[in-house]
Amino acid sequence: MVVDRTSSEFKSYLDLYQQAPLLELGRLADLERYRHHPDEVVTYIIDRNINYTNVCVADCKFCAFYRRPRHDEGYVLPFEKIGEKIDECRALGGVQILLQGGHNPYIPFEWYLELMRYIKKNHPIHIHGFSPSEVVFFSERFGLSVADVVRELKAAGLDSIPGGGGEILVDTIRERVARKKAQTDEWLGVQEEAHRQGMKTSVTMMYGLGESDADRIEHLLRVRDVQNRTGGFTAFICWPLQPDGTEMEGQPKTDAVTYLRTLAISRIILSSVPNLQSSWVTMGLKVGQVALRFGANDFGSLMMEENVVSAAGTTYRATLREMERAITDAGYQPRRRRQDYSIIAEPAAVAA
Image (tube, rainbow, N blue to C red; front, side):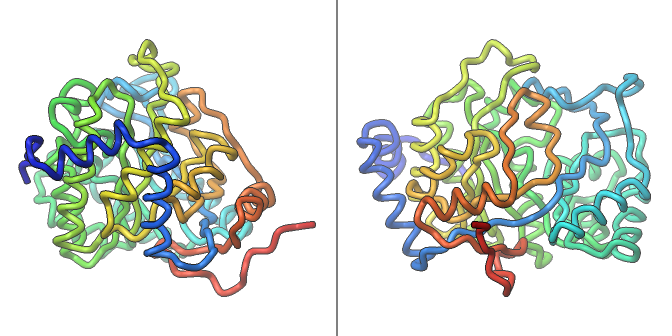
């Protein structure tokens, strides 16, 4: 898809993003949110983010988590350790793991397939794993088509694909900050292939990489184009760059108003994507609450474990009780969900 930045639609969205009063933009996003979700309910999920390796050769300028091969702090988790983490997650009501790692050139493809089989046999849980960038890496590293990589991972036990590595889906930006990683068409191509094979995926945007407002609008239109063809995206999540400890440390941080404006325009443009998450993990619980009036209908994850964002200095944490209280205080009923956004029968209850 080629986005026409001279079109009246593009100019209209860009003008709305840049010029609309904040509360008016929020009102429009809130109306779109209630069109999808008329009930006064905000969902969340209990899961665990398991980074199976931190060894990576992508060299993304915005990442403080990865370690180059042969670095003393590099690791690959053994299956048994991953199993222990899953059991801890399930013991706390967890229904999913988010399984992601670096572009590690020393792990054979069979290792990933055996990991899926091991999990499904010994620690059964929904596996939301391997970002599109990882799938492209597997394809290039092992000489397989993207379709074959997705097919084999799915057959081994992968249930859905997360939207990690989306950043800004404009090649001029990706080439500057992550040139060794999947570019726009490759990244979206994995998503579309997964949808063709019956898998659901999420989609993301990490902004604040020095891109223009027009780049952000193009990103959203590219996502909308895929969704209109496939209907395979369950949710959209956006958050700002966390530059501390990265090669982009000098990049100015964006503020809460920028986050709310970006979330709101995302809800307005992505009218065919059913769910938008509030990114309280990067913005804090208070801004996360406000986001529920700027288009978000989901509070994301309790996230028992998070390593990538926290490596860049973001330290927002919350207990289950604090999350539920934040949702309730914002005027909504908290409900636990699964990856596909179906509600878990037992309603969440806030402790007195």
